Image (cartoon, rainbow, N blue to C red; front, side, top):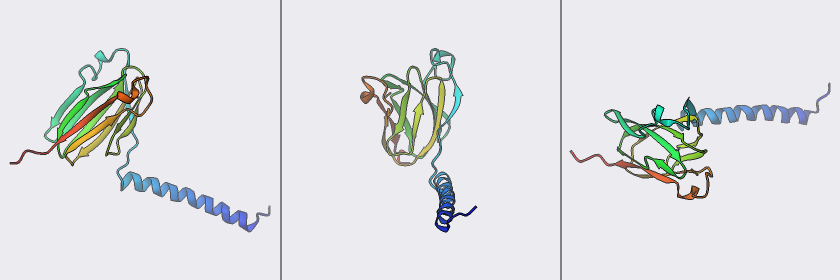
Length: 159
Ligand code: CUA
């Protein structure tokens, strides 16, 4: 079969691109710390009282290590505020009690879907004190635009 040399060149170029893209993903994952939010468990969205989400909120696992259980519900986050000291490593488990929501934390790379029945897990270390706005970025009904919360990272007290 005869393949024109231009066609062959473009063929090699296309295959080369696949490797470039693959390298870009590896770089983002390893150097940029970008992680794919993954479902880590399943719950019955109609009865969160039988799950870890029965008492949403922040728990301290050890000094500097926290986990938070967060429930998205039209149109609030429960809890709507999470307070941690600067430098803390925070693991957030989030699920929805009703419809699909979006979970984005401004100023960070946290950006995930919240799907009823699925538990989404994200992790991050918050070094810089400040208020990080939590927004819902998946349309979830008439008050979707009001659905916000925040993570407050408090400066460590002077010794
Ligand atoms: Cu929740 Cu939009």
